[in-house]
Image (cartoon, rainbow, N blue to C red; front, side, top):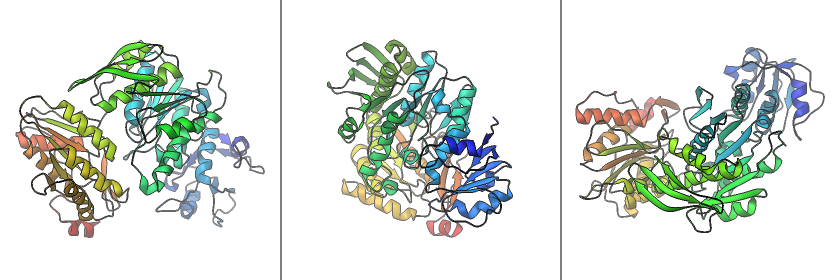
Length: 534
């Protein structure tokens, strides 16, 4: 997809305070924030990051062909090129990109989904409902972007794509003739203004629980970042196809409901299992193969079946149903068909079966609440009779919210029968130190090291160990990585997929053919050695 637009035209279209005069009339053929990716004709936007400063790479961007630069520092290395100094280039980037791509959000009906847990699942449920209704729909999640028949990877670790990438995806959808898009949005995406110019029509929240305290500083700040989805509904431009301007919130989420119910100024509806919910689930049935319930509101009562498991997915289904039936006026029966059509989400309670007599599951649960509901879902799946057990394998990331390390170990000590603590993106922190914090949490809830919980630093060996503990009918649940394709040790990403690791360990255990165990620097290596290596 090629595009070209005058730099002067772009800045004339931006909202205050970024709309500027005396901008040169030069053609821009792309927008880039990484100097290594600059092509001749690009606009380079320099931004300060947590570990590097884009302003330091302006000379490299110019060398690679940048024709103009946006930044916030006083710089002297731009030569004769236009340098546009802004107070907040990061916030301006989303508007610059939207203008460059001719405001694609204004040509689409845009549904935004946010929350701590369940965002990706709810995004996919809404997408399936749109397809069931015969709408030409696209999707941008933290897993991938789906544009017609094209599926694009959105990165190693899960977060909202950068602002200019989001706008490019939206523009590609417009070019492909799509009319609707579902966009999963993270707190990082909102706090870094990546989706401000997306022109949302419907906002959906799953829940707002404990996560990302390292970035936001407090739960209140984290909640406020999520809430920006709903304040954005007030400023969405009028669209030829109309504006729904609907906020959809979780009646059962005590942490967020009262705040959001008061905060949202546009039309709003809530969903949940409580009788007071606008759209609620009754007669809920759980089974190892899925969930079944009746969705009921003042306007309809319909049976809903899903191949997803766990009580939390009842909420995700209700969120998708409410957004599409009341936001887009779709037939409730069609919405139920879309929900039933979703087979599953990569790395979300994904079963790995190589013929073993127990259940092996990989799940993305990486927050205290997500781990809790995943363990509860696993408990619902256990076969009746005998004494089947849940064996949980998980870690907690380095350089991230430290409070959740102890919390997650406490939850597992209470809800799992056996727990194996291991690595999960330790980055430059001491893995032994992280595991000690988690072990303290397990001990505080009655965990006995060597009997009910263990520390196994290498994640591949931890999965092997958990599988060796498993007996017939047990569930081994590897949490925290899900579909992710890498793990960070030191400053380096290593290719890693929990699903591949689970298959490798199972094949070794069963003596059948399978993939090799992916390599991590903790493999047959002491922490002291890999710290030296990094």
